[in-house]
Image 1 (cartoon, helix red, strand yellow):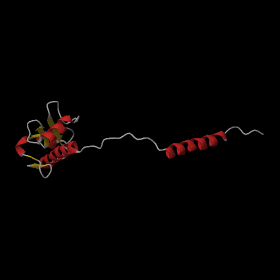
Image 2 (cartoon, rainbow, N blue to C red):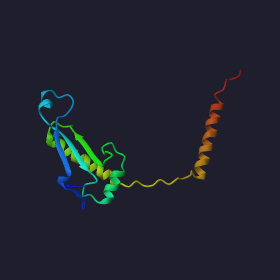
Image 3 (cartoon, rainbow, N blue to C red):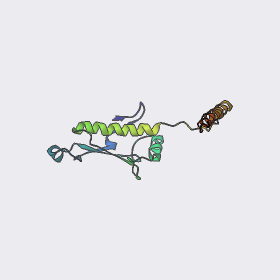
Image 4 (cartoon, rainbow, N blue to C red):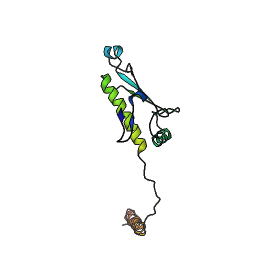
Length: 137
């Protein structure tokens, strides 16, 4: 059981974990052991609340396919157990990130004082530059 919050959890049977061989350098060890973890989680077929599903499917994320399947490949560690924990942690982080509702931006205008300060600064800068001309004898 993967805990997302107090009320929401994902049963283990909805997460498909497969051990595969890791890519990259590593010599003989990488060629003979399956330490990388391939995690697949079908959002539509899961027991998550509808709100969670809508938010996840609405995300434009590289880990979520067009079919609504989250695919995570974890191969940072040489241990299969550590890679399994890393993949599950990345899944939890993805779901929790989808649940954060960002504040809507409201357009604002600069205050009268801010406009005055900006114009005074421009006048000062112009006066400084005017003094940089050639010196006449």
